[in-house]
Amino acid sequence: MTDFWIILSAVGTLAMAAATFIALRQNKGQLDELKRQWHEEHKARIVFSVEIHDSFFCLKIENTGKSVANLEKIEINKDFLDKMFEVDGEFRKSRLENLCANPLRIAPGVSKCYQLCSIHENELKSTPIKITFTYDGVMHTEDFVINDYEYIRYSWIIESGTEKNLRKIEEQLRKIEKIQNGGS
Image 1 (spheres, rainbow, N blue to C red):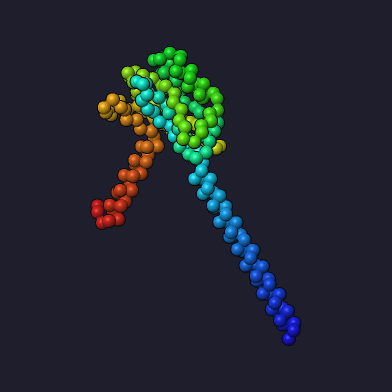
Image 2: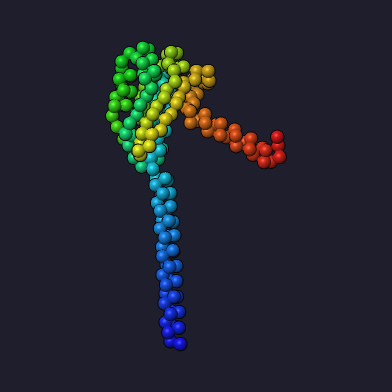
C-alpha cells in the first residue's frame, strides 16, 4: 500500500510541475503582449501635412508620439521637386533635397516646417506631392495634393491620401451600420 501512495504522490507532483510550466508559458505570453502594447503606446508617430505659414505652403513634419522619431530616409517625388525648381528656383528645392539627403531626428511633440511655395504659385497647386519615408525600419508613403478649389477664408484645405482613405472607410462603416439597423 505504501508504494501506491508513493506513485500517487509522484503523479501528483508531475501534474503540478506540468501545470506550473503551462502557467509560466501563459504568463510569458501575457508579458509579451503587455510589452507590445507599451511599445505601441509609447512609439513615435510621424504626421506629414501641408499648411500655410506666412503666405507659403509648407511641408510640416510632426512627431505626435511619445518617443523620439528617427527618420532614416525621406524621399519626395522628382516631378514635384522639378516643378518647384521651374517655379521658384534653387533655394527651396535645395532645402528639400537637403532634408532628403540626411537622417532627421524629431523629439516628441515637435514639428519642423519646410517651405514649398508661395500660395500664389498656381503651377504647383496641381502637382501631386508623394513623400516616402522610413522610420523604425518600416517604409511609409503619404500623397498630397494642394487643392485650390476649397479655398475658405484665407486658408486652404489640403487632404492627404491617408485622410481620403479614412473618409472612405467612415462612409463604408456608415453604410454597414445603416444596413444592420434595417435601412437600405
